[in-house]
Image (cartoon, rainbow, N blue to C red; front, side, top):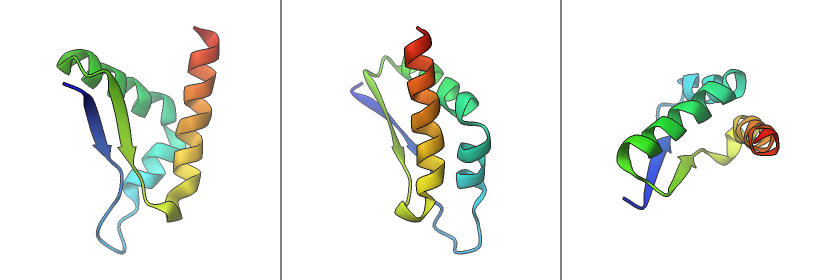
Length: 71
């Protein structure tokens, strides 16, 4: 498998739980992605996030950078 996709782009206008979870629990979200990649043999993981939720994406990026630098 080439990659795993995590859908963080809510389609309902009043639902914003995915963005909130990514903002407040980025390490756990990234750990889940890593587990799914290992389970499927995927070489990469991708997140689908709407541009209006850029702060959620930044939280993931920041945590990813922290994780990479501590390895």
